[in-house]
Every structure is written in C-alpha cells, then in structure tokens.
Length: 140
Ligand SMILES: [Zn+2]
Image (cartoon, rainbow, N blue to C red):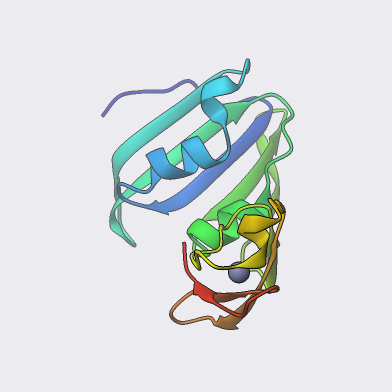
C-alpha cells in the first residue's frame, strides 16, 4: 500500500464508497484547491472491503451538505496536531440549495434563470428531492 504521510492539521473524509471519491473530490472543487489534497482509491477496509479516502491539509470549510447528499455514510474527521479532534457523522440533508438542478424543462426556474433553487427531501431511501417551484422530483 502507498504510504501517505500522516496529516498534522486538516480534514480526512473517510469511509467513502469505493469509486465515489473522485465525484466528491470534484463536488468539493478540490481541483481548484491550493492546499495539499490526497485522493486515495480502493483502500482496503475491514468494514467495506474497499473504500476511498480524501485527505486535505490545512483549514478548509468542507461543505457538509454536498457530502451528505453524495454519500451520507462518509465520516469526516477533523485533525489537529496529528490527532483526531472531531468526528462528524453526516446525514442526508432535509433541504439543499444551489447543488441540484431541476429536471423539468418547463420549470419556472429555467425561464426565469433562477439559480440556488431549494430542493426538499421527500424520500430519503431513494434520495429524492422536490423542486420548490414546480414540485418535480430530482435526485443526484
Ligand atoms: Zn422545478
């Protein structure tokens, strides 16, 4: 296994479902980050078989809404002085704004060019959200 030096200060996004790491990497816009970022894929995991992992050195504001939406089962660890100081459990957000896009071509948000539409969770199991304007259902 590739050895990645231990994080002194930063964020570790752990227990990412294998192959979802790159998606999360993009959604968090880590390709634009100036920090040291490591994406590890297919890391052996006793619990999951294989998992992906992202390490970010430095202080960043991880958008937990985005993370919860893509994969509510990931764990976010905050690391300071080489020690884990905080472990954050995610959940599927009740409401999301500015991430999803309405799939209804006749939705008023399209003609009015409204961004930051709010979507409300209606089915957690299927990850279904409804558009606040037209009630159309959308999932990520
Ligand atoms: Zn809509």
